[in-house]
Length: 477
Image (cartoon, rainbow, N blue to C red; front, side, top):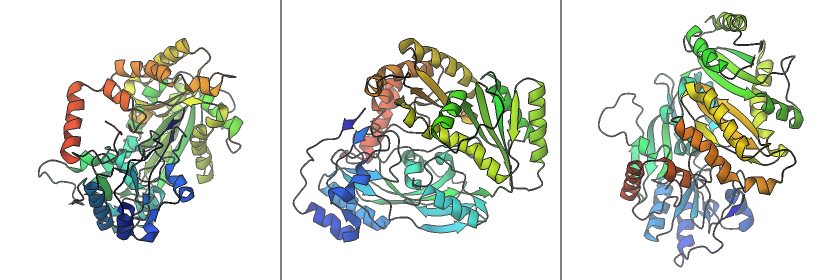
């Protein structure tokens, strides 16, 4: 499914790009089509972008100046982080692209306050390393962490594999710096954990996908650096068992569960087929698996004994039918690679219709059963691949095309099959977008899913902050 952006760009005032170049310097503006291409290529290939220029400011002041210049010219803007989004939120449809890549400095680290203040263009993996260098943990972790930027993570309220214990991006941010649609700078870079002085303005911009302003800096929470991790890969015959397994894990570990990921056999099979480094850690085949990790900042926490006792009791009670515990960091990485490879293995297997949903944790097994039935009823032979962050109720529910099916013909049924899945989500009190956002891809679903009151409230906020509609137009609303 490819949706092309406009071929004809909206007219810009004479000399407009020259004014932008004056603000950011020659190194900060890209107009050559070949050099622009990486900024216009969307991750999944669903959209084809178009823009008159990529502007790369190096400071908050430059962002403010270029936003003010764009506002005066009625030129719309698309803020862009690492371009790893999965819903088209960073796709330009003729707008100026504002890339934060040059704004990549860590402004301050305060180990005793457990915070760091950073530019929005900092790459997530680099922030993890800076935290570790200061004997602290920055727990936000996701597949694109080697290239995604913290500004984009905040703009999409990114989740990842550690939300169960640490929360998503929204819960990890204490303060923000934002350039508003008229070019004003809001300095909300507070490092306070308690500040009960009116509206929590930062929450307007977290998850707003750049439609209300451009995040240029943030104060992020840090945590004690783990000294001990225990990782298990367990086999489960019934998906319902994950509920009791998760509940026991939280109780036995004193809520030290950092990860609880669900992996289906089809996901492991695809990984073994297409990703050579993948291993099958257990002797026999099973329908479902869970990747479970306990962690502590104390090397003598006793979590290893807790993990062994937890699994022994689960085996005795029939909740788990087999298990492997990593005995080294290398083995731990092998187990984690299974989870990562499953994502990579779907593309070489053919077309896949992606769903990023959440339901109450107690409803995860019911969702999988009902969604499988709904999808196969409409498309016999479709192969559901349900996996993800069961600890927070987030299921990546992907529909792999039937064996031998035509890619294009299957993708043409995207709306139909997605509707079947979303009907189940709605009935179970869930969300059709757990961590990937709305972007362009899910605008229609948002309007259908939300109440009229919610949509009116969101439009009111958008119109108040961005009355000209110049910030990432067409996204979210």
